[in-house]
Image 1 (cartoon, rainbow, N blue to C red):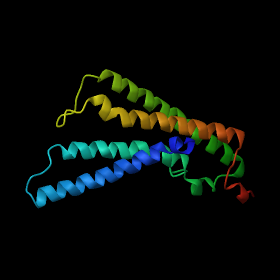
Image 2 (cartoon, helix red, strand yellow; image 1 turned 135 degrees about the vertical axis):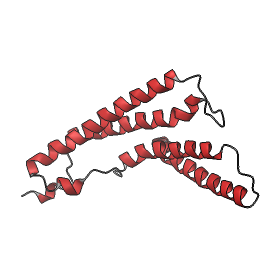
Image 3 (cartoon, rainbow, N blue to C red; image 1 turned 180 degrees about the vertical axis):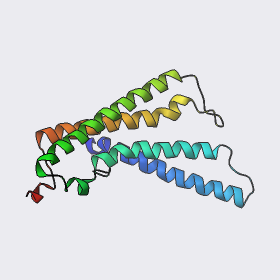
Image 4 (tube, rainbow, N blue to C red; image 1 turned 30 degrees about the horizontal axis):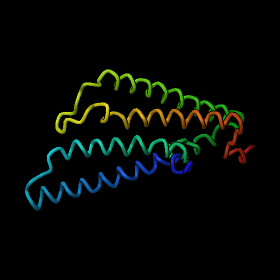
Length: 160
């Protein structure tokens, strides 16, 4: 059960990606074959895309899928590699924390608003963004703490 909860963002991202693909296919079929496009499909596709990105981003961060430019960092002198990696984890945690805070403020200021076509309440529409940035902040904070405890610099074998 713990593994399921830990990977819930991966499962939600997968679900929303499948939903997005099916909705786009349904929209194409309805538009081309039946000449009757689905009302609000574009807005729903936009929502599903937001869900895919912001539920998938914390999973990508945890699994090392974000750009780290390790190839570039191997050119650094050995003594510089540790502080650069440490600073990258710390700065990611801080920046995502600031953006998460801003997204929470945006959510709170728009509680009464709704989307244009489907009239989805704004809190529901923005919630994947808020959760995604909060989970990214947590993920990078955990990586920073883990790196402080166990500074695993994978390219340290290239020590001159």
